[in-house]
Each structure stands twice: as structure tokens, then as C-alpha cells.
Image (cartoon, rainbow, N blue to C red):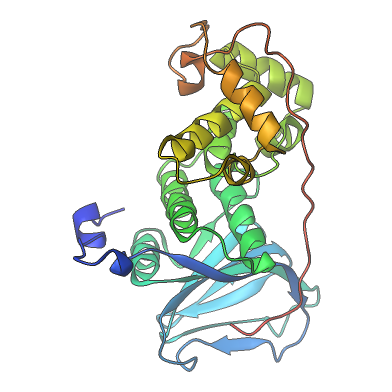
Length: 309
């Protein structure tokens, strides 16, 4: 994104000073019709943080460097606080401005977002049916829960979202590949109760067509690919013996320690199919006996009222 990792991540002598990204706040669904809805980012305290706010419907307005930018549906603005910018509900609008937002804290987040904005502008496309859009939704939901998560995993997820967003902006496409989209979403969100139905919806095609296409391209069904990602992540956590099986199961998307144990056992042996070995998912396949897919829990969105940022 124009800045080298060496510049962004200077080595620290103290582990506690690792320059990670924290995610304390997020709102899944907020709306306004008030002309008094306006935030001046130059007058919001001294602590640095980032606001990313995406329009669901209606329209917002973002002011940056003396220019007004519309924020239409499927687009998000980036603000780094404090700075001479602002956003508001346009006075001439009649329909509600509905949006979701999150806050990133930490120098790394500020530097990444400032660089993203310098390259692509302050208002950027962030469609829901895209890997970056899906990652954004997951982070907003996490911020809305206000539940402390593993700080390293949170930082990794935030960093991954920003890098994926930059990749999408660098390679715009009117017709994103549904399998590539699903693979990136799986990689970013396998710890969630993510199922084939949700993946197909994100890819923009029917569940049956998506499953057939994904299996033909990778040699694995979407459910088995998800299970492999979860199993491998859990196995890495358990390797050092510092994390109990129950915690590893919950943190890697399994419904129970028993489900994790079954998946670990099935993962011990595999064959190499693969119709299309160019995909990472096609490099390993579980044995034919392990065709039963784990129960998929359906996640639901939440709503929230306006919170101070």
C-alpha cells in the first residue's frame, strides 16, 4: 500500500509495546434524518483513532481537505481523528441515512488508513458482497458486542481487512470470481459460525451452484474447506500445550471439544485430488469417510443506537 512493513512495524524491545490494532467500538445498524447530525473531527480530543463508516442506504456527506464527498450506499469514508474533517447528514436529503461504523485505535491503524486514503481517496467502495465487505461486517459485529477478544487475533483481523480492502481497490472488477471471493472470506472468518448458505450469498449465486462450482475448482466442498481451516488453526494452538482443548475449539469455530477431536482425527489422513491444484484449498482433501459436515450455526445481525465516538 505504498509503505513497507519495516516502516509500519518497527521492532520493539518490549513485547507489551507491539504496535497492534484495537477495536473497542462498532455499531451494526444506525440511522439518522436529523440535520443536526454532524461530527467535527478536529474537536474530538487528543487521542488518535480511525473511523470507517459505510452507508447501507440513503446518503451521507464527508468533508476533507476543503472538498465535499458524497457517501452513497456500498461506500465508506475514512476519517483519522483528530484532523480537519467532518461528516454529516445532508440538509437537502429526505430519506434516512443508514450506516454501520467501527473505530480502530493504534498508530498502525492510523498509518495504514492514511495511506489507503492517500492512494484511493477518502470515500471508497466497500460492497457487502466482497471479501473486504464481509470482513468489515465481522469486525463491526465484534466491536458492537464489546467483548474483549484475543488482542493479537483482533489485530490480525483488522490488518487483514485493511490489506484485503486495498487489494480490492487495486483490482476493481464488475464480476468478482465467486470461488476466489469465498476462499478469501473463509480465510478471514473461519472462526465464526459461517456456513455454506452465507458463503453463497456473499458470492452472489445460489447455494447449489456455489457448492458445485467450489467443489469443481478446489476438489473440496465448502464445508470441508471451512473445517480444514478451523482444524489447522486449532492444531497450531494446541501444539504448544498452553491452550485447553475447549478454548481452542471455541476460538476456532467448533461447537464443542468433541467436534474438534473428530475433526483432528479425520485430518490425520488425506489424499490429493485435485481438479484445480492452483487453489490452496485443493492441496489437501479428507478421506471419503469424513463426509459429514459440522452443524452450521446461523449468525444474525444486531442493531445499535448512536454511541459517542
